Image (cartoon, rainbow, N blue to C red; front, side, top):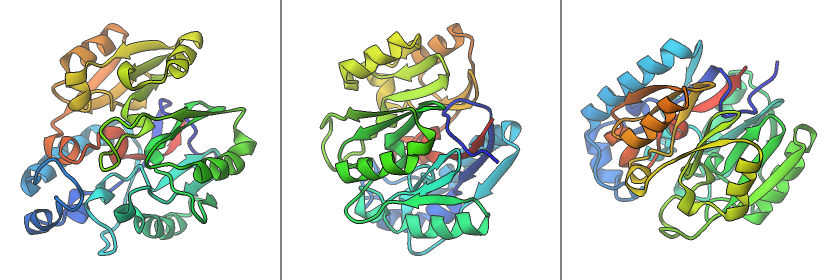
Length: 290
């Protein structure tokens, strides 16, 4: 059984977390949204309704969807199931979030993976911190890791060691300060691969060498404007090559994807995505892509 080492191959199995289990109730959201640095308080009923649409689209394309359980040890951000682990061809790496409030998620996730019999091939230790959003498979043999506020040098050293058997090229991308330490800039904030030769990017945040590397590899670039970047237009989940899912309201990005021959599905993501700055790639942890 080979696990995931791609952002764009056909999604066969995915881990998610329902807002019923992450947001819990309006009262809980009222109490917690400021602590977790959301843009404003999400509406619980709306969030559940948005998530229903989101899952309906996933269900049409993904044969197996696993739901993380409710746990009083984790907070609102646990809805963003992508970050506490990263899958490799041999199984999962348990990460340790650069956001302290999110660190307990890894323990819950580890138990969940064991229960689902998904192998764990490594775990960050010591001072290492990293979020899944900073780790991108450019292709099966190329792993790109963002060095920023959420992923430190020690994590990069450990990730390089753990993934060595599966990776020919390990690329470190220095992330900019951007909105600062409290905000969440991940490598995946400004790049989504939607096919082996098609990427959605927000170029102003990209280091020149990385942008050039994509172009040299023959990867066509869909440019996301600042306005659409702020509406998570750069956060696009590939359900299969050139079949993708994004937050609605990003018309220019959507049109460029359609022009590139992609099929685009949209969901209203104000409560579950925009307010917590976590788009469809953040809401999903791809376990198997084939």
